[in-house]
Amino acid sequence: MLTKKHVKISKDVSGTTGVFGIIGNPVALSLSPMIHNTMSRFLDIDTAYAPFQVEDGNLATAISGAHALGIQGFNITHPFKQDVIPLLTHVDPWALKIGAVNTLKYNDKGYSGYNTDADGLYTSLMTHNISLDGKDVVIIGAGGAARAVAIMAAHYGAKSICILNRTQSKAHLLAIDVKKYYNIDIEALSLDQWEKVPANCTCFQTTSVGMGQSKDAAPIDELEFYKRISVAIDLIYNPFETLFLKYAKRQGSYTVNGFGMLLYQGVKAYEIWNDIKLTDAQLSFLLDEMQKEYKRQSV
Ligand code: ATR
Image (tube, rainbow, N blue to C red):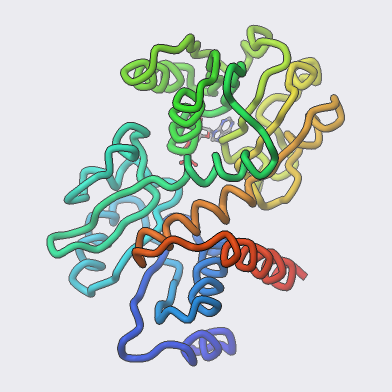
């Protein structure tokens, strides 16, 4: 059945519109359609972007079907950022190093994979004047998002990295992968070993704890842990302030949520798809529009 919302979107779509989308599970609450459709509207580029929820086990079928349909590109989100890699015809070296892909671009034989999460997060940190050079970095989580953070931290000169994960063996695997590329002091711990974390650290929260059904939870509840954090970054953007950020703020940390990263990774994916580079003026105009659009949608 067509809803009012569907009719509104289809008004802009013609026979020549390039189709893009996001693949994940769940995707219903994703802000990526808003971000990409806002960019197309303001840059007057004839593309449309839609959410595609894919069930576990159906990813390969979804990707080959999408290629047969000529869908021009995708963002890939939880839980497929690592699983999608073997299904691609080409993977950009930076994405290979991270071991996770969040952007696909159509080519004649299939899709090429990129990772714009790390660059998007780095740009977001820059806007807050946060440098990782010489810093002790702590990462909570060891999934696809944590991989992007770990490689970015090593690449931009962190002094040490400490990965805390519910499943310690996955933290170890990530540490080994980072060590393949960077000669850095790196430790893998379970969540309850937080007392080993150095003081004055820059801490990234990359798990899903704090959103959806766990929106009233934090991955670590001991307030002593938060006293060691000078800068706290949560990759979650909904809610805007997670319990992790609230705890950290209460203990005096500077806090940053995941909204900036979301916007900048989206812009970077859009640039890859359309072979363009936005000017600073276009970028600041668009970021402003997207924040207004986000506020309109969240009323
Ligand atoms: P993403 O691509 O978003 O990083 P992912 O690869 O599925 O998603 O990784 C999810 C991360 O959140 C993992 O580090 C996971 O811990 P496990 O490796 O132990 O599974 C972590 N995570 C998810 N739910 C969690 C919970 N309830 N408590 C603690 N950590 C959790």
